[in-house]
Length: 555
Image 1: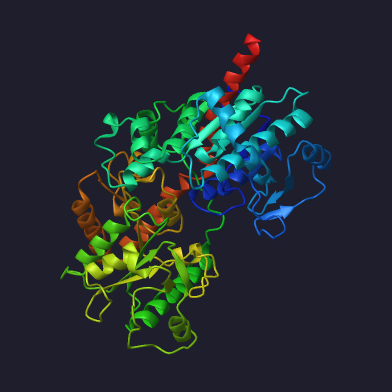
Image 2: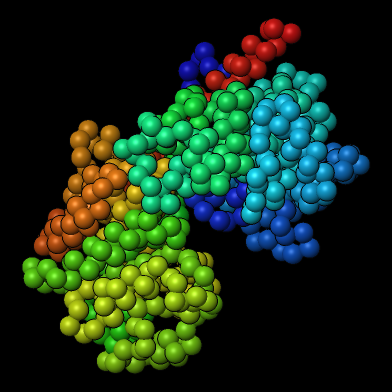
């Protein structure tokens, strides 16, 4: 860290995903925590929503004695919290806040936000109220804690808020506790994600879109408003990649002050003989389920590829992945069998009993189950995009189809009823991973893939893909560990063909070429470890704390 930069002495971070495993932001916070905790030594506190009052949360280790005098005082102020540690590497302190008492006052709270910052909450719906009341509660928590423990000393305090769900709290602190430096990080603009998800061309027309106008058209006014106004009023506005920085400037009318690329920790990736053991076990589990479903026996040289992430059919490139699989099946030069897994959580009803019964036996099956392309039952099979696309392609995993597709529509948390194996313990068994995203601010899934020595295929529209290209200095290829396919608003077919070419290239490699690509993938992931990327956060801390210092000098 440069000597002339101001560093924080105390950090608060607030997110809907603190002790609440939902998506990529959880990975950002939980993997970075150990690095920051080492540097801050328990002067790092995460704030999350308390969904678990009265129930055990395996991610939260409660400590009823910690800061107990303040907890009692906060309770008299109407703030209900629980203190503990986040059960992740580094075990940082966590404050979980009960935000439900603020619902009766939400109209007054929204009115204050409109008066002070122009936040338009009038058309909020769905999860808007719940997220906003949590955000407001988090702001009250920080204000109370700061006044009790930190206000008398020469503390340099930072409050970092993640995504629109925490914007209201950041603005509250900016108004009521100006001595605290505020940072707002958008991991994906709500309106940009909505434009892409509604099949509108995002990139070619980005310069011409008006964020406020599109928010009105797509019924996103409340979320867009809190995100936009927070970006304009905090001390430091940040995002996670260059691709999203352009989006922020165009749609939020605010240039980012810093780009905080998402790092990773590799301490849970097996090494040495353990890595080989885990990989063999994962391949065995994946091919075992494939045999039980399809009635096809798969040889050792079967190529296992997979896509995963949130179930955003277009944005995450699931549509083009299925198109590529369909085209791959017609390639006469493909001489090795392929099993393609789609691991995205859908509206799942539960594991298939007939598949469970087969997996309970050691038998090798030669007849398929009905619907031999899905591992779990769905609540609404008729309207599922993956299922309907497979039907459109007449894809039913017949024995004469060299490429089999298996849809795993559940969270791989180790208790899904079929694999009963956590996601990372299956990821290690892949030969290739495919993340053909159309909208991907960063892309943890490809970063996780290369960390487990699995070469991946991604696109130039993902933050990770742009970063991989920048590391190489030109277009990154599969032999580099990450193939980055050029993607724009209109070249869907070219992307599908690019995926096909990559799989065929891999299928033709000898062991030395495969091992080199896997080694290059791991080396690429090492460049994204938090020990390298944490410096971007200190740049943001400095920017925000400089603003606080300027405010103090004007007083």
